[in-house]
Length: 314
Image 1: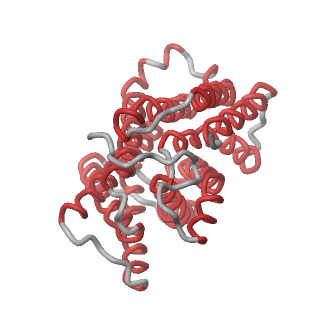
Image 2 (image 1 turned 60 degrees about the vertical axis):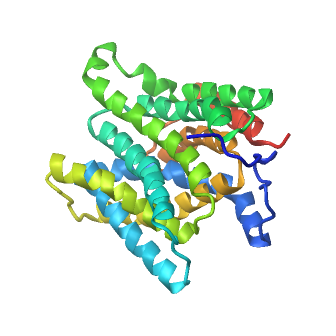
């Protein structure tokens, strides 16, 4: 990929062109809403994994998302890409953003990767994004943003500290392959973010996202057929997890992410990932009674401070 010709915006919520009033409102509420919805994905996985193989569940999720988005696009007369090249760019972005990322992470968790290590790998994504922002899309990462990114990473480590301590050294060898799969997923998400910013900036979000999930299905569908028995037990928890994944994750959360990518700087957007472990910990406290330690509480505060530093305007 080459650097984009356009100049990046100076603020996270100030696009290079003037959006409508409704778009400006959406951009304003998008960061926290996205962080909350994205965090719920880890809770959903806890409910879904016992009743389905990871690739089978993701295939079902993408098929339903394609159907829902196609209906929305047709009902609203949304424009479809006018060339095969434009459609292919959306599909490739989906292969990276959804197929590669979710496929790697869900398979790793299904293979026994501890949640603490999965959280650390996810926390590497903002660092990787900041390193690649200048060469790939011409974005300058300021000293204050770097300070926020490193503070956010430190906060995440503190939040995940109890789970990291519980990972025995002897078990690391048995989860080496899942760790690599998780890391590959994080790299895929990072590259997908840049690809979306660079090549899919003008595609309608309704039809473009629909095509993205076609690309994602092309990744996880064959893996489900080759490596799994296509088991999906239609329990109430599995069905509820699937419904939430389609509506709130694949449509609402991803829609907000794509809006932020289109109107903001990818390095600032990536920093929102640091809010995921603290929010997930709070959700686990409410749903599963998992207690928070003082170290975790301090980590939450540090992570929030890091996100604030990394995303606030110059």
